Image (cartoon, rainbow, N blue to C red):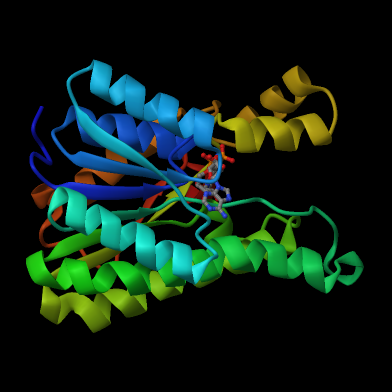
Length: 254
Ligand SMILES: NC(=O)c1ccc[n+]([C@@H]2O[C@H](COP(=O)([O-])OP(=O)(O)OC[C@H]3O[C@@H](n4cnc5c(N)ncnc54)[C@H](O)[C@@H]3O)[C@@H](O)[C@H]2O)c1
């Protein structure tokens, strides 16, 4: 309990999957949580869940690629909750799975708009508030931001970008006591992975094959990532910035 008590946290893509787990865990540990997503009913259900358990949360409709929406939603959070301490840049899409020479520019840009432009815009508009109190930005990259897997080219490019945006912003804002770290999940059981497997064939066989890619022989749970987010959001990680926290069942250990 209370590992982030009284801190004000924004979680983008908070309606489902890893983002939802982060919202629930941060709230259970005492944070006031701004749940932001483009999928409204599920996001409001996350808020209801938090409130029913005695936590504090509110939902905002937010497309992370839209600068005006980001600017106004973050201003509303700061006004309503009294500031911003934590930004979890979680919203992301996997995009089209085609080899590079078959991709259209639109398919490329669609992924960059959410996964890279979204992180840029949310960071840009959170910084003025984080500067007032110090804070922590946690960027969801991926194992695909560390190594190649031979598929989803725009996704790899976007997650590689997020990894280095993290390190550079860690250097720029260290003087303001703003820490910036990235998390690199292996496969985690969320709608993103479920939909990916559905589009590639039989789901149970796909699950087994994906589990076998990890030395621990399983797919991770959203909470496995939320625990990492909680650590990086809390003061327990007050000397940690510019780092990459790999939570991947050993996938990249080889
Ligand atoms: N699940 C995995 O195996 C895995 C592995 C590595 C990294 N990640 C990363 O973790 C993050 C969360 O992944 P997930 O598996 O929970 O995905 P998910 O698809 O299950 O959930 C993503 C959430 O982001 C929201 N979203 C999408 N576009 C948005 C936009 N433009 N603005 C605001 N919200 C938007 C969706 O509505 C959804 O609620 C992503 O950045 C993803 O790339 C996931």
